[in-house]
Image (cartoon, rainbow, N blue to C red; front, side, top):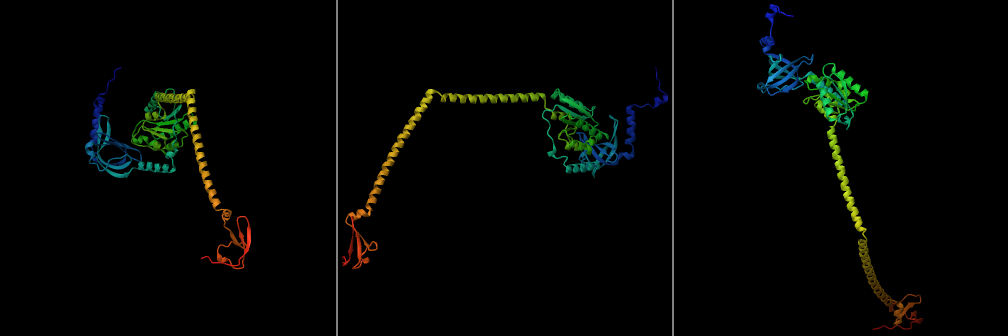
Amino acid sequence: MDIYLDQAIADELMSVGGLTAYIQSLLEDDRHLRQVWVTGEVSSVNNHKVGLFFTLKDPDNGDQINCVVWRSQILKLTVMPTAGDQVILLGTMKIYAPRGEYRLQGWQILPAGEGLQAIRDRQLKDRLTAEGLFDSANKRPLPIHPQTIAVVTSPLAAAWGDIQKTLGQRYPGLQVLLSPATVQGESAPRSILEAIDRVARNGRAEVIILARGGGAVEDLACFNDELVVRAIATSPIPVVTGLGHERDQTLADLAADYVAHTPTAAAEMVIPRLADLINDHQDLTNLLKAAVHQRLAQETKHLQHLHQRLDPSRLGREITREQQVINYQQQRLISTTKQRLQLATQHLYLLEQKLQALDPHAILQRGYAVVRSSRGKILRTGDQITVGQSLDIQLSARTIKAKITEITEIV
């Protein structure tokens, strides 16, 4: 069937390029849009070699506009746009024809304070930190060899395919459970909560991977939701996040037990490669064999040493040598004993001579006498004797009594 266009329609027909050029002329020729001041919250900053690309977001209703500052203009900026900052941008509206996109080409950026959403996120972070939800002491270790892993993500997302591929290559036969969830948009927080709860109620998984692919910062808002953060922190199963963003850390990352920057890295974190396990097992086996061989060599050497010690001829020589030592010690002991006995005998003889010399009976036998008073007191000098005094004189064999009739002085 042939179709013919009305001539009026044909006259109005425009190409894509023509329509884009018409819209471009409307925007770029509008005097109100040639120099416009716009305030908003910065997000999704990308410092490219040709310029600085970012998004300005209205924190009240979520409206967004793409912005660019070309490389030649960056050094003239008063401040550099940082995600979460509230700024005032001076620029002009431009059309990027290859994609049919409009964006704000910036000339100057002025500070306008911290963005509303950034303030809310910071306040929530401070409150949850004070509650201890992010404490490292609460982080749980991952199982060494899990048999079942649950993945919370969108079944249509590339993250799910990356995780399946990585787990399949690293550990064939591993059981992987998908708990589907919406990971972007207003419904995402509730969907993620339900997905984590399903895994917990199922009870088979030993670890949970919460994942999504890369995206703009505003696409990750659901991972800063308080209910999602609490669900991760209180999950009875360890949680690993792989949210596909390296520059920005969400509150979900802070609450998780482990953080990976991509879904693939999260899959690699929770399960070792089977080839690595085989290599580790082989290394341990080799170490064990080496240890056994070393111990066997040591014990064999010790046994040979014992055999040598038990050799009859060697034992006889040992006995003879020990007997010689004993005989020498015996002779030395006898000689030493004799010497000490001789010395002791001589010493005893000297003591006996001294004792005899001091014996009072021996002195009396040599002609001496002991003179005592009638009361038995020994008298040693003439001053102690008077005429008429009675004395007892002890000789060597007997004692005689005498009476003093005269005392003569010896000159």
